[in-house]
Length: 301
Image: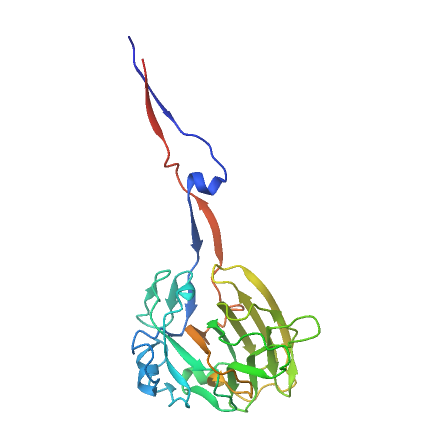
């Protein structure tokens, strides 16, 4: 009797369960990343730890891109596991490496929410080539520790770009963000003006990207979930324009809001002043079908 080999597979739904899928994100170019592959979670944060945990091939860490001593209230934070780099990170500059997706999973740095500003910050100061840039982008992995505070309109200035003239663009959290949003994030610029808000869920992790053109005054803010789903985007144009290139980045809380007992975590902060993509985020992410893995070999007599 003749035997016949038949290859067969059973179609199942959903498609991705049967065939499998992977996320394909294109690399993003960055000039600096705060990888925090140093320090011990819970220990006090120092300038040495911040500089040792910062990588750049386009500026010299500790020379023309240097962290100062943080104010009180900062510690080395635990890895915010949802905020590893979603896709590859390609470092600009001679000899710059590319970090594969999900390889930047070290520590974070944490700000004690019970320590209010102004001035509850750590400051990264630039000179040389970075200080010539008049447009800049950042991507910040942020896990806000603060709960919803429905009676408080106090701001949390979590991340700030400054130029040499003192102009700025700020990632600002607020529990009463505007008339249509409760807890959310927005941009503040100088003189004081605000974008609309992007609604966030308190105490959840997000990727936030801030773009600022110092000459035009235009600032854009984007928010994504850790899986790369866009939550929203907003824009505002500052009245104060020009006045020089990138001078400093302030991280922490430079406003008067506080909440005892919680911490806000910053993971894998990345900055690009060379090309300033708007936004600074991975593109693609399309589910790629994989060859079927449930093929069965059957022998028919």
